[in-house]
Every structure is written in C-alpha cells, then in structure tokens.
Length: 424
Ligand code: UD1
Ligand code: MG
Image (cartoon, rainbow, N blue to C red):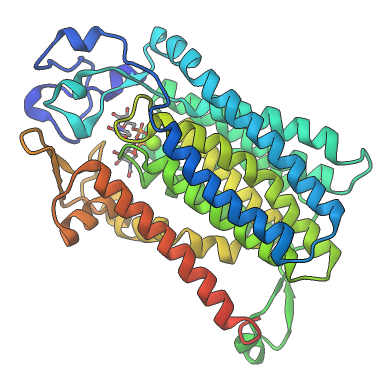
C-alpha cells in the first residue's frame, strides 16, 4: 500500500528510497498524529482564478464576436465547473479520513528530517477530483447535448477513457505497480477513445512541407489512431514524472488548462467555420471543469501540502488534456504547452530506459538545517533547475517551474501568431 511504499528506510537513507517502516522522526509523536486538512491557499487560489476568468470572459464576451448559443453553453459549463470546485473543496477533507484509515498516505520527502517530514500526508486525492469531474461533465452532457448529437459518442468515449485512467491510477496508488508497468496503464485506458473514434483522420500538411509531400492534407487512416494512442500515453506519463514537489502536479495541470482555454476561445473567436468552433467548444467543456477541480485540489496541495495528489491525479489530468487535445484537434499546440514535460522526458530517457540507474524517487536532496533543496544527478527538470539556478526552497522551485511552464505557453501563443499564414 501507499504507506508501505513511501516512507524512508532509515534516517540515513533519506533520499530516493522506499521502505516498509514509518519514519523515525525527531518528534515521533507527530508520526501518528492526524494531519490538519484544510484548503490553506484558498484565498490566493480564488484571487488568481478571478484574474484568469476575468480575462477569459473578456475574450468571450467583448473581444470576439461569438454567437450567443455557444456563449450560453460555455457559461453554463462554467457554472457546472464552479459546483465542481465547491464539491471538491468539501469532499477532500472527507476523503482524507477514509484514505488514511486504509493506510493510503505518503511522507513528504522534501521535508525529511523536520517534524513536517514525519507527518502522514494522505495520498491519492486525485480520486476526488476525478469523480467530481466525471459527475459534472456527465451532468453537463445531459443538459447541453441533444440525444442525437453527433458529438455525444466522442464525448462519452473521451469520458470513458478519463474514467478508466482514473481507475488505473488509483489501482497504481493502492497496489504500487512497478513503474515500468505504469507506462502501460495509459495505453489500456485509451482503448474506449480509440475504438469509438469516428472523427476526422486527415491532417493538414504545414505549408513549407507541401512541396515535399505533394499534398495539402493527408489522410492518416488507422495511423491517426496510433497517433492518438501515443499522445495519450505521453501526456499521462509525462505529467506523472514531472512531479514530487508540493503543488507541481496540480500546478502544471492548472497552467496548461488555462493556456488551452485561452487557445480555444481565440480559435472560436477568429473562425467562421461552425464545425471548427464546435470542436474547440467541445474542448472547453472538458477543460473548464478540469481547471476548477484542479484548483480546488491545489488549495490543499500547495506548499506545505496537506494532501498528495497521487498517480490517480497525474494520470487523470494527463488523459483529460490528451482527450481535449485530440478531440479538439489541436494536439500540435498542446505539445508546445507540454514543452517542459517533453524536456523532462528527454532528460529522463537514460534513466527511464535503464542506461543509468533509476532510483525509486528522483528528487533533490533536502537540507533540514537550511530548508533548501540541492539538485542531484538525476535527469529531471526539477534537478536541472536546481543545478542551473542554484539551491532554493521547495516553494520557490515549484514557482520557478510553473513560471517556466507559463513562459512556454506564452511562447506558443507568440509562435502561433507569427507563423499563422506561413505554417498552416
Ligand atoms: C514519479 C517519478 C519519481 C518521483 C515521483 C514523485 C520517475 C520515473 N518517477 O514516480 O522520480 O519521485 O514521481 O511523485 O520519474 N512526494 C513528495 N512530495 C510531493 C509529491 C510526492 O514527497 O509533493 C512523494 C511522497 O512520498 C509520495 C510519493 O512522492 O507518497 C508519490 O510518488 P509516486 O507518485 O508513487 O511516484 P511515481 O509516480 O512512481
Ligand atoms: Mg506519481
């Protein structure tokens, strides 16, 4: 179980180890005490959300001329998402009691040697986010789509894949699947999406490549299904391995979701093709609830975390983004939003494929005296940032990584602006 897999073996093996023993702590009484579960960062999360959604609704209502029916659906979906936020905030403290009772907890590795490092932090709170997300996206479907809507099949297939992924993520958290097997879990969860996919399989060839291909577009047929499969496997695993700092997993999901929402609204606003607009609206219907439920989780998971998100959340979030990207037909753009995850994957390749030893946790070294993290040789972006920009606290490191994520999203928007007309 999670508790067995996550504690350190002894105070000497503080980093990168797994164990069956609880941590011998400086104040051992703390190891048995129930942690305080509260959304301590709720005011900050609400302020940031208010700023983001003000910008989003400015684009929706004033900047672009969007037909009122589409606007109504997006606003409707927003209200569902707000309920999702509230329910997640309410349910997380309830769920933690049950998770702790079943010994689903982890120790905060980046606080080892301090009293905080000895507290049992409830794990797998992604299960609450996943369930609330699914409930509200399913309810929204009932209110928004007519029973003969051609979008329903894809919408349901997408939701089935997200649901399947959440289940497998939870299985992983409970059973602690060997991590190479973890790589396979998302491939199983993509089955509903791929089997039911009836959308287009044609890709538009970038203009500079048309002379080489000889065609303006290319029907990939079954190869498109392989592409969807690879995208989902990548998105889920790449979020899961860019992790291990308080707030990083939920934070990166929130930043990417914001970028996806802005991208979708820009595409809807600048297009006259109703099919194209529907495709992007479809993506908004999935990403708005993903963002709000993730923000609710982040208010508990931000430094110092009172809950861990677990593989349940990393897989769920990766799959939700992959589904929105494939069914919304903007996977290229999504991949630029995922630039930090791609970088983290590339620098991880030698360890992931066994060329170099890969410890159970590839996290920095924590110094309890100074409270600072030092980068190890492990090939993760977390360690690379510490090696390049020097030692810092866990919170600063998470903020730097999220700022880098946001920067990549901004660069993506600039690139799209510059390349429009030349590239596609
Ligand atoms: C992936 C990474 C691993 C990283 C881990 C952190 C690879 C191949 N695997 O493994 O290097 O250490 O994610 O999630 O790159 N934890 C913290 N602080 C946090 C979040 C998690 O200390 O803010 C620790 C806790 O002990 C928690 C555990 O990480 O129990 C969760 O690890 P898990 O998600 O099971 O690791 P993997 O996904 O297998
Ligand atoms: Mg994980």
